[in-house]
Amino acid sequence: MSHDLAADLLRHGYHAIPDARRRAGDPPVCPVKLLGDDAVVVSGPASVRRFYDPRLIRRSGAVPPPLATLLFGRGAVHGLDGEEHRHRKGQFLGLLDDAAASTLEDLVRHHLGTAIRERHGETVSVFHLLSEVYARAVLAWAGISVRHPDKVGRRLAGIVDGFGISGPSYATAWAARLWADRWARGLIREARSATTQPTTPVETIATWRDPEGELLPVPVAAVELLNVLRPAVAVAYLGTFAVQTLDDEPALRPMLAEDPARRHAFTQEVRRIFPFVPALAGIARQHGDWDGQIVPRGKRVVLDVPRTNLDPASWSAPYTFSTERFLGREVDEFELVPQGGGDPAEGHRCPVSRRRSR
Ligand code: HEM
Image (tube, rainbow, N blue to C red; front, side, top):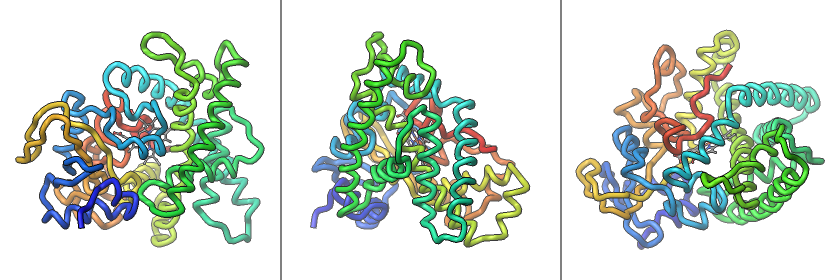
């Protein structure tokens, strides 16, 4: 039976890439089929460094269109290259600065406290509770008022749910994407008609322009607004893994409560060990040698994110949860890649990935 990685990612989620590697005998650069074309899967810091070199890899067209539209939306920063990317990324980095992070942290703390008080004694789904809390926080920060932030949170979390998960969840993710696009376009139009001087994040995004000085088309500004709201709600996935870990290892709780350095180490280890993004895709700009395998120009290169985070050459006992590994150590920007690698200002690494938690 022939396997296509795109179909396998949808059908088998996080197992798709390890299965493809096993079938190929686990070479460092693993040949696969992706949407009928030849592609390679790579991992590890040396490959990450190449993957984040814009002279070697471009992003436009790299993620198969149906998945790219579902996850990021059409025209999103994720698929831009060169000056257009630098310009758009600068706008994200300007918006998601330290002040924004600190406001969001305060809002999350406030809404989490309220939710815990209100649900005291009830049995709750941690994931649903956290998606609601993150949704309330990010909507308040963005300056968006809605009647049912819990429902908005569920729909935004639902878009991410469709990645690498088959069946009804994929259909639900599409329904959530179509709803979210329509909703966000309305917000952008409203912000454009109401303001001349932006004061809130939604108004700021509504005024973003392209490098030629033209206002972004409404659907693109809407997609970028969702590219802030959606991942902020998706932090609920990592939050749930964090709660699960604290439940499994209660001895960690007092240590984290007392020590900010260990708290930060804990968040790094949660990001490292729990799967979130299974893969990132690029297209080779030039013929090149990737660990002994020649990758011709135009071939898709897929970066295996979980395997890089669990690479035994970088991490001792990689499958053991240990906050110690991050204490008193600077992390190499190409070894730990749950939010991408390299410098966020220079490439596609997530704009919120280098901040220390308080
Ligand atoms: C759950 C925590 C998060 C994870 C695991 C995560 C992961 C990622 C990953 C893997 C990428 C792609 C990197 C690449 O293509 O090279 C990315 C990009 C991005 N993330 Fe995050 N992210 C998270 C939270 C956030 C939050 C909270 C925001 C916004 C408030 C955000 C905004 C973005 C944006 C705008 C990009 C596109 C950057 C670009 O293409 O240049 N992410 N993120």
